[in-house]
Image 1 (cartoon, rainbow, N blue to C red):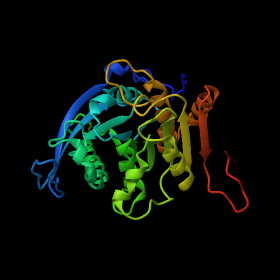
Image 2 (image 1 turned 90 degrees about the horizontal axis):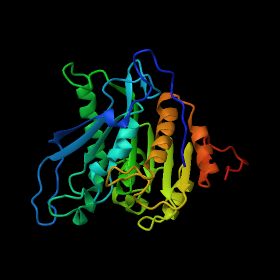
Image 3 (image 1 turned 180 degrees about the vertical axis):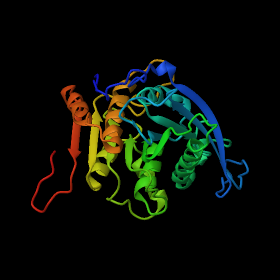
Length: 313
């Protein structure tokens, strides 16, 4: 499956997209002193939270849909339980090559090298939405500092989140739970979200939230597709559900090597979704049409139904 999208026309000196190999990648470590890291698996906790964060961005702002006069859109990537930000490199490079600033923190107790083991860190999910908010704070500080590579590069009005598996649950907490909602995140994509962990936040998931794209593989044996379908049916529009035939839990977003596998189509879809919801692009309908023509299932509802209306299947 290949999605063909058209970006804004490029100027004489600034391209509309670049080779993903030319994307700048760096790691920054930020420490939040106001929230603790609990003890885990026999390892002592801390009074602060250390967020090692991987960044991807083009060497300069591109003449592309994500970028405008106030800077470019920023997408925060939330990894899954036992995940690793390095496995998101292919996806992040593809998005950064289209103009997005991409950031992926390693959550203190759920990444694959967690001291004490991520297997006992599931309860820290409650704090992970706050981690994303904190990282966004630091990115905005960096973008305001004249000696920083990100100076002037981030538009604070164009902020989205992409969450995979437990990271999908994190994104639900960030956008749909009173404990953790951050209104600066105005669009969300949930990739194979571990919906059954969301009760850790307490209370009910709000039906009202930002535009949401849910993506799930039909061959996922880690998180059954029925959870994605149930979530889609329970939330208010605007919402989209994409069920990719034959893909498993990780193959649509993670790569353990330089082989991109099925990730480019996912990146195309995410670029089109966030381009429309954050930056006024118009490529999303075409992207979804291509997915449907390739034999995958798409459900979409853009507006709240009026009494007596039926939802589009």
